[in-house]
Amino acid sequence: MCKNKLFFFLFFRTALARFRQAQLEEGKVKERRPFLASECNELPKAEKWRRQIIGEISKKVAQIQNAGLGEFRIRDLNDEINKLLREKGHWEVRIRELGGPDYARIGPRMLDHEGKEVPGNRGYKYFGAAKDLPGVRELFEKEPLPPPRKTRAELMKSIDAEYYGYRDEDDGILEPLEQEHEKKVIAEAVEKWKMEREARLARGDEEEEEEVNIYAVNDDESDEEGSKEKEGEEGQQKFIAHVPVPSQQEIEEALVRRKKMELLQKYASETLMAQSEEAKRLLGL
Image (cartoon, rainbow, N blue to C red; front, side, top):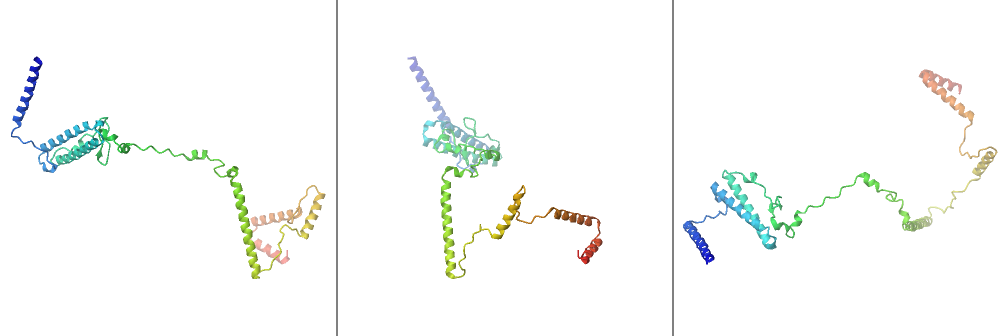
């Protein structure tokens, strides 16, 4: 019985409060926020509308934290928050024009529930569960750092004989291919030479010459080499001289002449040298 009386008392009190509030607001027209910030010419009202927008943003940011709302509802809430942010920026510009503070410069930075700056791309921000939507998470993933480049000394450590191609023939594949190609090239060169030779003979420009054996030795050369070999057999050392070798006496005379010329160039004057040359010419020396 007491519980029923308490229930009716609370219900009556609530209804009375609502009735009293309706009486107070009777005759008053609820003021709506202007669609354009430029339509407001009073600084206090501009501050009021800015605070109202901030309150709406706070409510919607709290709602978007719920990941169970679904992808479409989360996207709509994120779009509405960004729209309100743009509108707040317009009112801040209007407040600065009316002589108020510059909130864009002194205002706090927009942070998420983790204390990090709200991520976004070209002014569009993502809040709460919107950051985990498909296609959005990839926008904020940092690309892995490229591997560090190796220095020249590190690159030289892995260079061996195989790098320069010295071991290409060890696989047993390249060498047979090269031999086959070599035979083919030689055959083509021989065939080309034969065709050119037949063409020359057909024109009659040249008579066919006998092939010369470049390794043949003349009789005179063989006789000289044979005599030198016989002379060498008598001594202890055997050699074949292909150029004239001066004797010991000729070498000594050449050294004496060279020494005389050096002394004359060092101590004799040009006049004395000229006279000496003239005397030698007259004497036929």
